[in-house]
Amino acid sequence: MEGLYKLLWDRVDFNGRRAVDVYLGEIPDFRAAARMAGVRAAMLDFAVLLRRREVELAAEGAPFTGADLAMLTAFGEQRGGQGVAPASGRRVLDLHDVLTLREIHEAAGLHEVGHVTEMIGWLPANGLAGQNAYLQGFLTGHQRGTPFVKRAQEFAATLLADKAVIPGLPESLALGFADRYLITVIRLSGSPLPSEERREEIIGALLKRERVPMIWREPGELVVLFPCEDPEGARDRGLVFARDCAALTGRPCAAGAASGRVGALRDTATLARRISRVAPVEARPSRLPVMTDLFVELGVARLPPVDDWLRGIARQLEAGPDLVATLDAYYRHDMNRLNTAGELHIHPRTLDYRFRRVRELVGLEPGSFHGVRVLGAVVARVLAGRWA
Image (tube, rainbow, N blue to C red; front, side, top):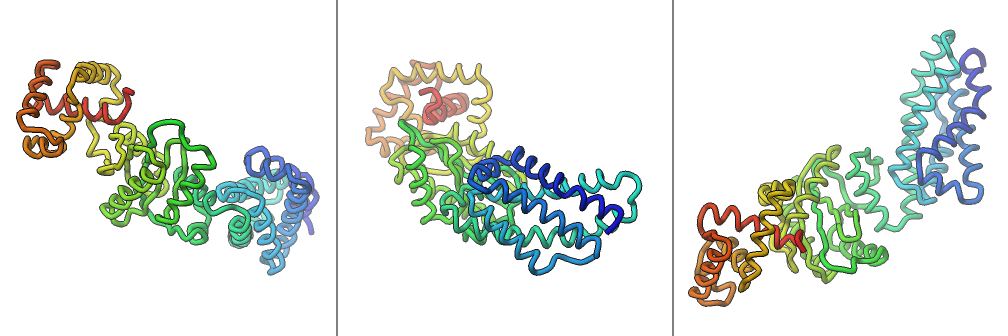
């Protein structure tokens, strides 16, 4: 062994120690695992052993042997069984690639161009084989050591963070994988909000009804990802799911949805969350709104002066009787008086009296163009609970 390979061989202990320090500094899950007895020492032994094998095999121009790949699989299985999340398992491989290139650069300087070319040529195919072996073992250990509910949430978190999904992870969860998802954000109303233990129970129950990725982002906010090959079908599933969630928790809720491609779901989730915050809070959600349903309310929510003006109108309508509920029914029935009166179980003349009260209190005709625009926005903001 000579040249670059000898230099790398002489530095494997230093490089291995530095690599472990980087992993622990960059990956919280690895720091947590390293607190277990003997784990940090095992990490260091593996980092050193892996580097020695890479130098030996690259110098010979030989691939990883079956025994090498079995060793990588075993170490991946060990890591996956220690509670390390898949995103962290993927991250450590990325860090290893970066550190390997750094180590080659540091050892080579300007004098080992030939060996550098050989080493760089050896890495892609063998690095991929090593990564696949490690990840295969990681998924086995992760499946054995981590509850299904947690694994489903970790998968959802990976998608929502626009991070690469470990090959085989969706299949190990039987959740499937799609190019596009309809992200549905369900916001529970009322207090106290479910405890962490109760949230785990809720997701466990919901996963039995819908095998899709989902995660609690806040104690009162559940984010669910529906494969979106069929947009209308996904939206129907999302509405049924929101109703199931409301029934299971015994809480009224608001829901909003938006669709996007994998790799750009972070922004999609942000939009769905904004929609859920202006959507009506209902004991049994009547629809699953998307941006085109609530674009006025979304705009109002981002303009405090307009929001304050509408809130003032809402306060005037509190003089009643039941004017907000009446206007809500009126607009939901496309301003049909008879259907509105029928839903409210009142006489059409009583409905006319309530409309007259609206005109007296706020100076707006409920059925006029201006009235629909203003009063419709007021009703939506009240029902969303944003002024409670």
